[in-house]
Image 1 (tube, rainbow, N blue to C red):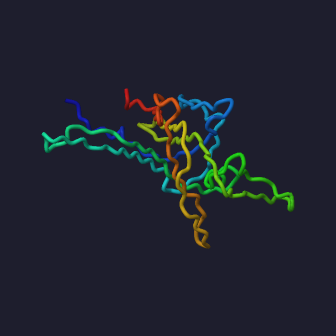
Image 2: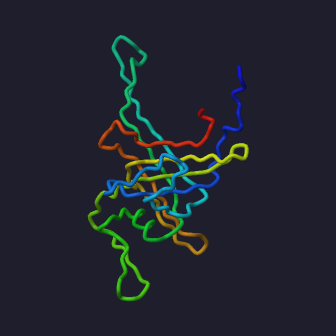
Length: 200
């Protein structure tokens, strides 16, 4: 039996990037399923904190009991949640509206009162700001590049952290992005792409 301990299969997300694209755009923005293909039509959100990106998958499984058995008879999936958390460090026309839940009606605009001055209006009645989200990181395996991509074809910012404004640290936009089901539920909630021969 071969040794299952293979250190070359250990992955470290040494450096990466987070990108977004408009969901339902016309023409549609493609999700690049080839890691050699660039993220055309996507917007990279720049620096993130050293915590990187945190991916969480939570499944809720309900137990089915019967009179004739003390043990469960079966289990039923009742909920699945996939979230991606990260902290953006750059403030610009892409990151601030994404954090605030803005869309076409809540864009950053020039005030016109003073050159180089812009405003962002936080709406009283927010509307859904659905996006596509992509995450990519690179590692090496015996000197050979390894690339991982996660593509979420539909989702939205569902939670944000408070922005701490102090003299001793950079401001950060802490975001939780939650994946939504597509209208065609046979399509995936998210897709992992791995340029990594460990899966051969």
